[in-house]
Image (cartoon, rainbow, N blue to C red):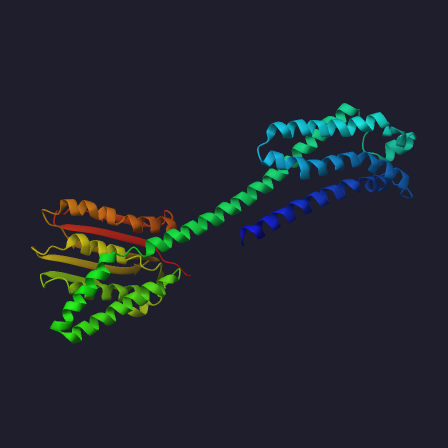
Length: 352
C-alpha cells in the first residue's frame, strides 16, 4: 500500500466515523419519542431539537475542516484565538436572535429536545466538542504517520539488506579473474573449469539471492565454488575442509541468501598465511529447528592485529542478522586457543 492510498483510507475511515456519530445525534429526537411511548412522532419537536443541535454541527464543520489544519501545522496561537472566536460568535449570535422561541411549548422542550443550556454552557460544550474532534484527528494522523514510518523503515531495511547482501570483497572478483588469466597459460582446462565455477557464483549472486530466502544446497554449492576459486591463490600448505548435511536435507532447508559466505570470506581474509601452514574448517549442521555454521581458521603469532580486524569483518553479517532475526540468533567467537579463531552462527530455520 502506497502513502497516497494509506492517506485515502485513513481519511475515509475518519469521515465515516464522524458521519456515524452525527447521524446518531440527529436520531436522538426520534429515540426520545419512542422511549416516551408517544403514539406518533411529532416532527415539530424533532425540528426544534435539530435546530438546537445544528449550531454544534456547524462548529464541528468549521473546526474540522478550517481550524484543525492550523493545529496540525503547529499554529497554536491562531488556532486558539479562532476557536474561541468561532464558538463565541455562534452561540452569541444564537443568544442575540433568541432562538429559544422554538421552545415556547414546555411539553415540546421536555420531550423532544436535548437540554436547555445557558450560553456559557453552550460555549463550554462547544470547546469540549472541538477538543474531542482534535483528539480524533490526531489519533488518525498518528496512525497515518506510523504507517508512513513503517513503509519508510521497510524500504530502508530493504535497501540496507541489498547493500549488505552484496558486500562480498570486491578484490575477490578481481583476484580471481587475474588468477584465471594466469592459469590459461598453465592449464587451459583448469582455467575453463574456474570460469564455470565463477559463473555459477555470479549467477547465484545476481539471481538466486534476489529472493528473500534460498535453499541451503545452493548456499553450500556457492561456498564450494568460492573455496575452489580461492585455492587457486594458495599453495598446498593451506588445508580447507567443508562439511555439510546431505544434499537431500539441504534442499529442504531455507535461509537468507549470502549469509554464510561472510564467515567463510572472513576466515580466508584473516586466517591464511603464506609463510605458515594454515587451515580453514567449515562445518554446517541442521538440528532441532536451527542451522549452525562453525568456521575455524588458523591464527598466527604476528597476526593479532588481523584477528582484531576480523571482528570488523563480521559487522555486515551482524547488521543483517539483527534485521532478519532480531534477538533470535547467536553469533559467537572463541579465541581461547592462541592458534585457532572460531566463529559460530546459529539461526532459526524458516518454513517460508
